[in-house]
Image (cartoon, rainbow over all chains, first blue to last red; front, top):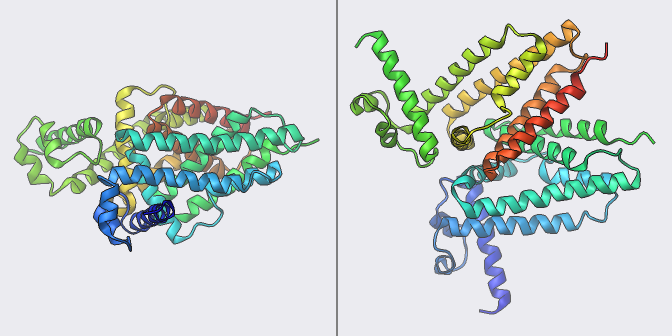
Length: 198
Length: 198
């Protein structure tokens, strides 16, 4: 198999994992259910991965890579638009049904992190990346005069926790309006904390 | 068996469930592991409950009752102390190891709510109760002049989501400082949003 073929297969395994998680959730997803979603030889999948945990670790890395690609595309924006764009990646103003299903599975995986060190490490990297992006956007905004001079880390942590809380509650209660209202509240908070009066 | 004996047994089953959840987490807890923590006849436990889900539904109701008792004891306080006391119940300033273990299990249960209607119903009741308490404390504070005239529901939702996000992130990363910092951020937010300048 050439490198390109490996890359293609890897991506297809990740996409099969995504579909299985959306359909069954994390707890009910097995490696054989992921194999059911995979169009190529199932033995290829079993050859690559010992068990679900092994595959999921790679999947979390895949999500992080995807997130990094998205983040790279917004780094050229002005600070305010950049901050809004990072928040959009976390809690979009509109969440569709498929996204809700995927977020359910992600919450389950996050809840398993204390029992799976490999999950926890990937989630920690992902948290650091997102938090770092929010901090950068705020600091650039302060430097450019677009934002007031606040403690960027504190404001970023607050935004991040509020976003996660809205996701956790919205997913748990299966109520999109908790996410929508949460997003509105974050926008109001950003506006009241960061708006520059200069 | 007299009514008192039933009550005693019920409480002991709930306490056994608490210990099993702290020790094993939710996913790894089975009804037989709960029975291992139960000092009375195991057949009594199997007689009362068909499966883990059945028992956990009662356990969530038990947690809600406990919470209601705690809330009743703070309703006599002044609005500001009452608000702080509700926030204390959600995110205490200090979290010990046992509490972290229990919060892990609760996060797992919450993450399963979209797949278990009975869990979801109990969690919804619990969310409504806590949110209602925060709203009441803020509204009483506004009426008494202790707080500024804000939209009590919006501020309460924001506090609640931030608290849940700090819990979710702290538990996922197994990092108590996320909880402590989150609590501090909520205190600062309450202070800046509600402090009355009159």
